[in-house]
Image (cartoon, rainbow, N blue to C red; front, side, top):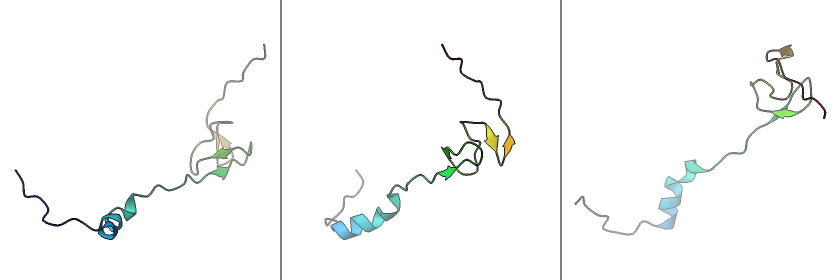
Length: 64
């Protein structure tokens, strides 16, 4: 068996160790073509453009 802690860690020491584990909010930017929110430096999944250039050919949905 490995050695066990001799004293209880205080809440402050425990929380300082975990301070870098906090979640960060997702940063979204507006697409320049369709104005939908998208992740920065990624292709827009709504219109398929990146930096104003069409990169993906998007399929159009047929109305029934």
